[in-house]
Length: 458
Image (tube, rainbow, N blue to C red; front, side):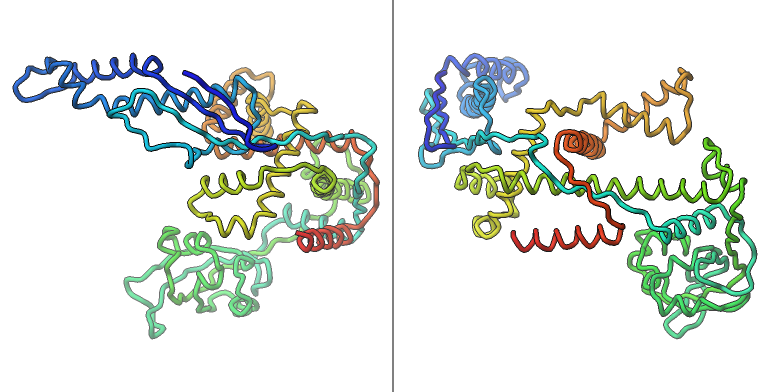
């Protein structure tokens, strides 16, 4: 075997792989011998078909299969051994690759084009400044948090008329096209919140109604949600998705939530591990909770702003023609015309990924399998309030974590989440943060304006 690399541009090269019989013939012979043992052919006992006959019948296919295996392995090994930082994956050079004749040839040549990742410098230090917003939580937001908390920990009471947010229980029956009860139609005793109804016209029909009164409506159109409709009617989601019938709902019971009193009993329920003496302290605790939520959004915006700055300020070339070829080859849904039209977006996305890879490599940002497993265990330990000293419970967490890790999609999501957290930590400690105070409404306006400007540029 002979492998050589020829530069074809600043960031492109062609890899030539020459294969001779010594590279593949032994494995081809082993494959043919295995076939001989398994073959049954009229006139011969099982496994006794002459090797020459087996070779004549199957050698061409065996050579083709083995050459492809050797070719793939040798190309991958060459890239790894020579530490080639490539973009995408190698593409066959259609001009230089000839039609392969496995029947008459024993020596083969193959050519692959590769795009090489550009080298560039990128500094993460306090020489780079980015805006970092500190959210001022207004009293009106604390008021909303307080009211929501009171409702969440409130007590259910019976009501006379339906109001917004009430839970209603009753019987729902399917109607025919003429508005009569369908004898063999869907019928179910159910309960649901008025807030599940997103169609305002239907919602108004319910508001103000009393027990024993009736409302006619189409559940799927009213909720715009097949899952909610299926639950309401006691049917499968698949059945609800195509249901276009009117139903009559008879009101049996109206339940309201009487908001909890703002007292020590509520303080203990909401924050059992804290000592809160009065409403003022409770409000400050809620304010801190709101601030923590909003600051996560500020952290995300910090990363977004920093990445925009790096993309704008970090200059490097890409092997554009190779990237376009690779994009077309990598997806059946993308053709050359669409790549040409949208290449600026594809290019920006690739540049961002290269910059992220560079940041991760230079700053040793890694997410290991152990990190993902510990994250999963920590999540479930918190959910089920497991005691870390309980060995039996901890073993259960290991089993749960191993099960989650079998789900590649979920594992990928957790990986991205943990990587983003490490990226945020790096930016917050290394970059110069220009701290600015803003209300949450002001922050939303700022981010929206940024995105408008950003989209206009690109």
